Image (cartoon, helix red, strand yellow):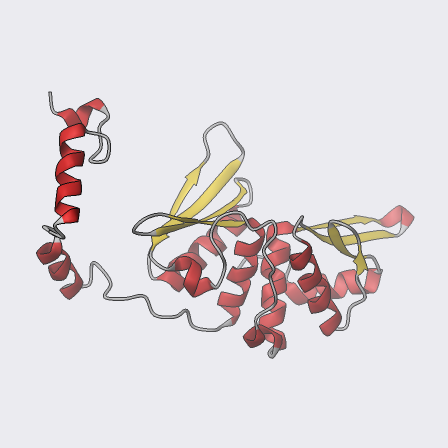
Length: 232
């Protein structure tokens, strides 16, 4: 039986692993000619240019900071955006954003036995181009980039992405209670959201793990401003 049918990979099969390591040590690249041919016909990109500054990139950055994760591997990186499988609009919107920004169609898959969908893509230098670190970001010292701070349209888009990922809106008309909040454990991200709201003229309420808008007029205005949960 073919050993590859027994669950082996080139990293786990003893003879293949040894051959692979020998070729690495001798710097032998037997796929070089094939790789160069694929680059010529455009199947493999020659490089990965910086992502163009835009409202789309700013919004996508917000979603990644809220619901995304970047994993680093020896030869590539993977970005995953997780969301509720019932939120079809979210899935369609940010799958399209991923494809347009990285010029590659992402994989959209439902997590087995869970009400969750993952939008994922493998490519090199994702972290560097997004300027977002890979791995756990609970203590990431995020600051709103200057290119976003200097443009209110970009700032609105960043906040939309953040609220689409980690925002919630509750209105109780009988008691005149309004709560439009962004919740996260990263204090630097909470501070960035607070600063962004204040720059746009809002008066957020600051909690330990959340930033809230509680005034009826501000809740309505901000909901319309960022087109919260509107997917077109």
